[in-house]
Length: 109
Image 1 (cartoon, rainbow, N blue to C red):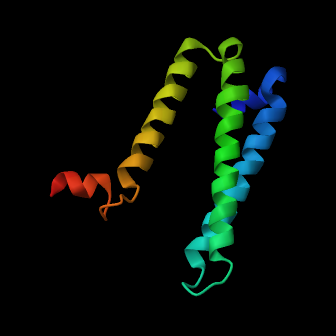
Image 2 (cartoon, helix red, strand yellow; image 1 turned 180 degrees about the horizontal axis):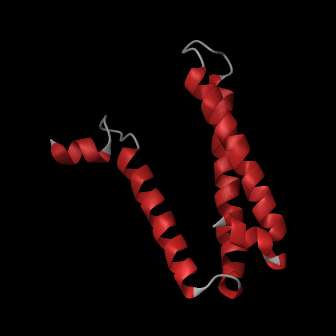
């Protein structure tokens, strides 16, 4: 979907920044995945990751997606909506809960 945003003048800069953010987020996730449990930089990396993700989502939702109205076809907009909702559902389904486990695991019990 970013291809459409990259091609449109109104969203070209935001799309470029979003793809850079994706690369930074992936790099941090890879670093956290391979980090030792005793790595003294782990907490700061998680904090940096959280900040990057929050900033990225804010820019997309408040700046880029509103501009999509004049750029995307109805079908592309619907596909993007489904993709975003599916991702949000997957994330919340797999997120740890205060009771331990994930919401999906707690529903099975």
